[in-house]
Image: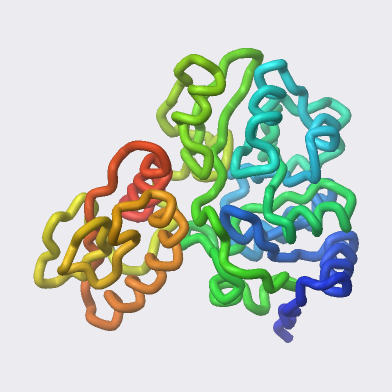
Length: 319
């Protein structure tokens, strides 16, 4: 018999029930400022394994650990002075740091995919942060969707893919940032970009007073979001399209009178990032109904545009 996914209200009773489910080894989807995460106790091997099973996620793809604050984060990872500077500037917020794993961390090896590093962050969303406080422990949480598909930014998106596969979802509103966290590897004073996201590269480089490395995607992912084909809708995607073909529907940016949907008619990258995953879902439904493909207008490679283009490139990659 298929389990039912409880829809929890975001009051004290709902928050406490979500924390109880996590403590019992259950799976709870919850809102963050980036996307909805699918949470499990990061110390519970069976619970973390259930994340991979529910999502159909490859076991070699590590997870991000969400914690309430820097003090808790330091129980699980070793912070250099540079890592502390980044945390002080951008936590709580959409930045994940990949750091050396503490020998006494006590996290499930499935969280780190057997690596000697761990990805960790402090979310800013009051509901996500409230759940972490109520639970009182580390929560492993990838995006709450079927692996490789479009990320969820509303409870409806979560239930569209995972209803009946997980124990509960906290019914919050839409996510403000709309793309996942930026992920940085920090080894001593060496900082490298692993995934573009909600904190821009320009912000990071301004803080550090220096450029950061941007390595190519590795064969073995060091963090989430490094698999070539990811965030994919059902329809095929063509990028940097100024005019749609007759068998395409156009997802616009800026002034595009031919656009079926527009990420931001005024060309605002923050608005486009917030709309990205929801509009990909909507235009995918339109394209599927019309037996068409999706064309996406050019988006500048600066600021949040780097994260948007990263997600679109992976969505358009061969499957």
